[in-house]
Image (cartoon, rainbow, N blue to C red):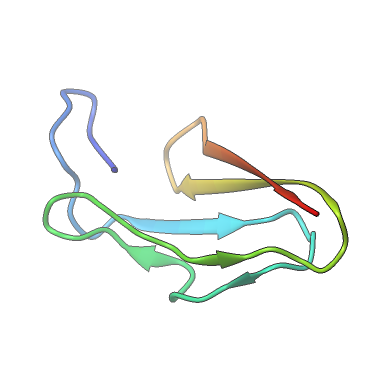
Length: 73
């Protein structure tokens, strides 16, 4: 969820997802615009190579990205 400094949802914010070149696949548009409730969803298919993959979600103007980790086996 994308929120402003007061915790209000930010509609239309472009959220870009990256796996840092790990080789996975994002199914939804990337970047994707946040809905009226500030939410964005993404489907990610892990690469064939085993190991940990760190996915970041960034928004222009926000200093710290959201990070998620998955492990391919």
